Every structure is written in C-alpha cells, then in structure tokens.
Amino acid sequence: MTQQALADRAGLTRQLVGAMEANRHVPNVAAALAVARALEVTVEELFGAGAAPIVPVTSAAADGASVRVGRVGDVVVTDAGASGSGRAEQWDLGDGTVSDGSLTLFPGASPASLVVAGCDPLLGALAASVERSSGHHVLTVHASSLDAVDALVGGRVHAAMVHGPVGSLTPPVGMQLRRWRVAAWQAGLAAPGREVPSIDELTARRGRVLQRAPGAATQAAFARALDAAGVGPLPGPVGDGHLDVARRVRSREARVGVTMEAAALAFGLAFAPLEVHDVELWVDQRWITAAPVIALVELLGGEAFARRAATVPGYDLSGIGSELAAAG
Image (cartoon, rainbow, N blue to C red; front, side):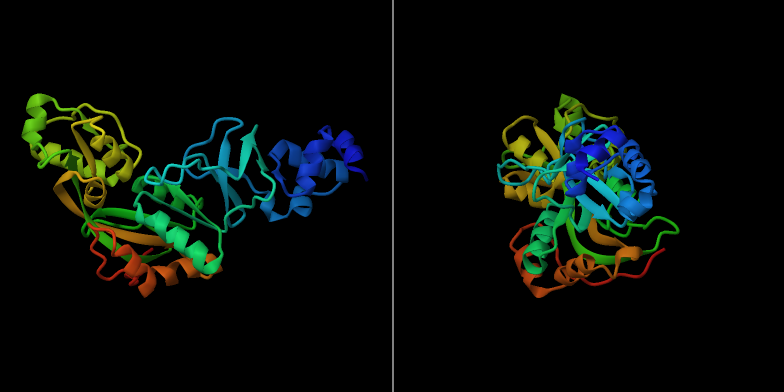
C-alpha cells in the first residue's frame, strides 16, 4: 500500500503518514487509531507498546511549541522549558514540536534515553558528563524539588535530584527508590554589596525580594524564616532557578534574592544563610538496571566528576556518590 493510499483510507495527509513511517512523528490517539483501523490491526501491533501517551514532564507546551523529548519506559515525555537558566547564552533548540497532542520530531532527532529532573545547577554538569563518557542522550528537566518528585512518582522521569533541610528528605511512601548522596549546601538570601539586609530590615522597608516558586525548597526555607520572625509574605517577582535569581539580583532587579550560596558566590553577591540542605539523587527502582541509569550512578560516584564538581565553591561534596539506606 502506498503512503497516499493509506492516508486516504485513514483520513490523514500523505505527509503525516510519511513522517510516521520514518519515525519522525509520534501520533496522537485519534491518528494512531485511524491508521490501525485502515490496516486492520491493533494500535499495539502497529506501533508496539511505544504507542503510549505523550506526556509533559511538568507543564504542557503551547500548541506548536518546540519541545525536548525523552522516553521513560513506554511513555514519551516532553519538556518545553530550557534546560537551566544558568547556562551560557545560547538558543536551546528542541527535538520536535507538539500539535493537537501529536509529536513531530525534527530530522535526526530521537528521544533521550535518560530523563532526570531537578533544580540543582550541578545536575546539568552531571548530565553532560554522562553524555560525554557513555554516549547516552540525557534530558534534564529544570524543576523544583517538589515537581521533580511528582514527576518521579508519576513515572515521567527515571531519576530526580532533590534537596531539603538536613535530615528532612523523605521518599514517597510505598515507592521503591534507590538513593545516593550528592552534596550539601546553604540556602539563603543574596544581595549586591557587602551584606544582606536582615528579615527585620526587609520587613520594615517592604523590600522587593526575588523569590522562587512555592514548590521550591529554597522558597520554603525563606517562608520558614519569615514565620520565625513573625512576619507575613514579602512582595517580589519569582525567579526560574538558583542561578537565574542570582543573575537578576546582580542586575539589581531586586534588592534581595532567595537562592543558594554557590549561586551567590558565582555572581559575586553577599550571602546570608538560612538553612543547610542535603542534596540527593533518587532513582526509580524499575530503571536501576537500565544502561543510562547505571552510567549516571557510576559517574556520580567516580573521582573524575567529584574533582570537577569541587571547583564550584559553596558545595560540601563529602560522601558524594555514596548510596543511602534503601527506601520504599
């Protein structure tokens, strides 16, 4: 059967059928059913288990928007965001576009075989090291610890890099996880100049504070500091990540920003700590024997990556790569 004949029988365009045949397009449910009916087979027989839904890791992209693409088991996942605000200035091109629930890959693009979510800037460096050393394509999704855990529970990522106050990180009940130590660092406030205004000073002057989204662990630290001081929320815009906040504070978009010590040091800002946070890598037990996951864990525990990470000030890397007690 020609592509045109199949397109006519399924009620689709020949171009769409050609893209599906060349693996450049992951169809939506309606298109997959139409082709399967035209060929008198099931969707599973035609596309295999991979005909599973196309799911955004965090928030859905606008129709027609460029997305980065990964595969987690039988699920194709997409991410419409940049891979981190701390990157050097460059266009972050995607792997394809999503329209009407269908994914069309750009020529030569293929889904990443490892998908990891988190907001620690070290995650991008770890992913790049995995790609260089093993050749596995990694999709890093910039997400707060809360959103990263939600994606892990939902089966939309293989692993999540999370952080929270020392001793507070508790995996979701009933989920089979493996955990590795990454680092510890201080969450707090950054400001231009030599010192950071106190909570009392910020409250008295109603100072503009560049903050994080509610699901961010650093924002939770700031909220606890405000509660301890007996004051309510302070006004201010929301930054996209640790490095984004530090960069915008340096440009004096806000008087103070909620971020991590390493980001403040990177941009030459004064820093006032609020809490010490542990950073861990959580991996869904289902993927622990997958080659890309093995490469990720081995690299995290290797001397080469530890030495590279040690060049970034503000991180306590003692115990990096050591496995923690099993959970779930």
